[in-house]
Amino acid sequence: MNEQLIQRIKQCPTLPTLPAVAVQVLELAQNPDVDIAQIAKVLSKDPALSLKILRTVNSSFYARSNPVSTISHALVFLGLQSVKTLVLGFSLVANLTQSSPKTFKHLIYWRRSIYAATAARLIASKMNLVQQEEAFLSTLLMDVGMLILDQVLGEQYGEICSVVPNHLDLPDVERDALKMTHADVGGVVTEMWKLPPVITVPVMHHHNPADVKDDETLQKLAQLAYLGGLCADVYMDQDAATAISEVRRLCVEQCQLTEADCDALLEDIGKRTKEVASLLEVNIGTPAEYEVILKKANGALRQLVQPTPRPTSPTPAPISPAVSAEPLGGLADRARFDQFVKESFATAASNGQTLSLLMIEPDQLADVTAKHGQAAGDALLKLVARLARTSARPNGLATLVDGGRLAIALPGATRHEACSKAETLRRAICARPFVHGGTSMVPTASIGVSCLDPASAFSGVAHFIKAADLALANAKRGRGNSVRAFTLKGPAGPVVPPGKPPTPNPSPAAA
Image (tube, rainbow, N blue to C red):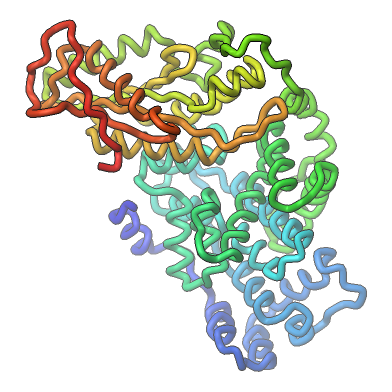
């Protein structure tokens, strides 16, 4: 966590706050013996808020045959917890939409948030979850940290968002630039607002729901937030095929829905989102139609799910010549990378600075290529390459070294910083389920790290690169999925004769 940034957030004079009515409702709701009449009396102090709640209860979301005309009736129908959640949602959205746009794109933010929240509530309803309003609000607020960072950092945060190709990559870029993510910031702010765990925990973990332990309800809400975000990406991304494929997979695995059910759900999300935006009084423009999106994505979807013939030989083929560094997520070509490392090594060695190198290999690459064909192997490598490019920011460089390995050069990074970045990359790879050619799995990677610093004994660039290779070999031992850093045995010093690599003692990155 970036404590300095957290203090700036807490001291920000424009930080949104909860209105007095919302605070009173929140306090009353903590009393299990509270009278409905007390809540109704408090809400009556804010006619606009009361009207929004009544409009919502009478909307198609609740499929009421008879209209609800009073707040007391709404409390009886919805229950105290649901009304409390709606009060918080309306109050916060009203405050958060008042922020002035800078380089951060507020319309895009609210479109994605409302698509995601609508999706989370519809999925929660299909799964017969009690916490449907909590799923809606926690998903609506899951990216609130982005609005807060925009308030505090202004153009700096807008520039961070502008270089991210899609939302799933945002936390890695934020972590590199700010030492914390918008999910971390959202957790800090929602706790400042004293919101309950059913809101704060999904907000904090909507990018990593598996990290929510020991509470099945909170983990389910975090999963719904993550899935809701993917449903929103179907409508927000230029290329929706990957998001559609992933939503279908998760709906089958986690929600026991068929693929046809999933497509019907996505279509319903598109239709309902406009109504929800109207209830929240947020203008998101004209939502796209799922049928149009699906038709556009069908070609790419067929490539994702089409079975690939297995090769006759058990030996995996080398990577296709057509897959070069440039199509692999915009990586640098090898010549440029080699020159970059050479110059960075010379500069660091001359000035007593640091330079780190990460060598990365997807653990399942050979197996995926052998079993599912070259296209599947290339797709897995592209996934890892995209994350490697993100990890190289802001001043590093990434490339494809050979058929199965990638490398990242990080000028100025210490051994500890490089190992921390490598571990973040390893976790990011594990968090990106791989779906291709009829196979679905959680990919892993092994990463080796070498670091040039004033105490290093590397005699040249070749030895520096060899050290990262040796650390990678050690990381791959056993089941892989680990980070290892190269260290020298015995006292450090320039004792390595030319032409002979140093004796390796790769050690865990956690050390």
